[in-house]
Length: 394
Image (cartoon, rainbow, N blue to C red):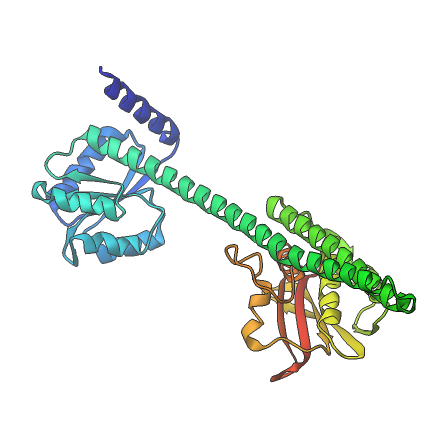
C-alpha cells in the first residue's frame, strides 16, 4: 500500500475509533425507490448495527423530521419532487449548520456536486458508483470534518474576542490615561505660575487637590481594567452576601472620596436584610453607579435615592435596585451605548467611563441586568434612574 493509501487508512481507522461506540443516525432524503433500496442494502452491509437509517422522499418531510429528531449526517438528493438543484441544499442549510450533509448526484451532475461542496455540503457521492466502502468513508469523513470545522469556528470566535479585548484595553489607555496625564500636566503648570506669588497659596492648594484627584482617577482606571480582565479570563464564584453591608460601605467610600460635595443618599427598602447570590464585586457596582451620579451632576446638592424592591421573573426571585439621581441625565441616543464600552467588538465609547463596562460584566456574571431610564419620564435633563436586577439568595 502506498503512503497516501496508508494515510487514508489511518484517518479512517481514527474516525472508526471515535464513532464505533455510538449509533450513527442517518437521514436519507431521496425519492428514487431504487436508490433508497441500494442505500439500505449498503448500510446493512457495512453497518454491523452501528447505523440507523431513516428516509423521506421529499424535502419538506425531510426538514420536518430533522426538526423533530437528532441526526448525525444527512444524505441528500438534489433532485426532489418539491425542490431542485442547489436550492435544495440551501434550503436545508438554513435549518441546520451542525449536521454534515452528503449530496447525491447523477454522473453528469459533478459540476453541481462540486458547487454543493462550495456551498456547504461536506461531500458528494455519484449515483451508480457508490459502494459500501465509499459510503462508509464519506459518512465518517463528513462527520469528522464537520466537527473540525466547528472547533475551528469556536477557536476563531475565541481569538476574535481576545483581539477585541486587547484593542479595547489599548483604546482605554490611549484615551483615558491621556486625559488624566493632561489634567496633571495642566495642574503642574498652574502651580509653576503661582509659585512666585505668596498670595496664591490657596490656589496652589486647590490645584494640588485636582492633581491628587487625577492620580486617584488613574489608579481607579487601572484597577477597573484589572478587574474586567479577570472577569474575561476566569469563571466567577458566587455565594450568599448581605446586600446592605456592601451598600453602606459604598456610600461611606463615596462621601469620603467627594468630601467637597454635598451628597444626600436616601434608601427605601421593604426589608432590613437581603441576601444576594453574588460576591464582593457587588461593591464595585454600587460605587461606580454612585460615583457617576456625583461626577455628572452640576447641582450644589447631589441627591441619590436608592429604591429597593422584590420581583419575580421567569420563576426567579430578584432584587430590583434603582439608583435615582438629580444629575444632568442621559439622552435616549446614548442610553444603550453607555453599557457597550468593552462589549462592542473593541470599539470605544466615551461618556460615563469604564465603570459601566465593569458594572455590566459583573451583573452578567450574576445573571443579572442593568438599564437606565429617565428620573422624570420624558425629560432626561432631570436626572437618571439606573435599574439593576440581581438574583436573590433564598
